[in-house]
Image (cartoon, rainbow, N blue to C red):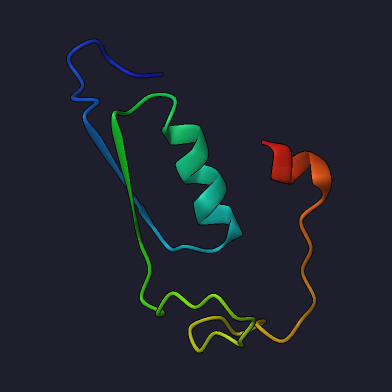
Length: 68
């Protein structure tokens, strides 16, 4: 999967959606640092996101996914 000469110091994930967060989680096993770049502001409240067309649809994360 990775060559021995590959620099594994830093990985960059573009997008902080659930897919981006899960990708960052997996990459964290292979890289010393994982940076997630997201254009929307971080918010602790539930709000609709401007950059996501399906933002008003219900999405859930099952307990097994949360545990991962």
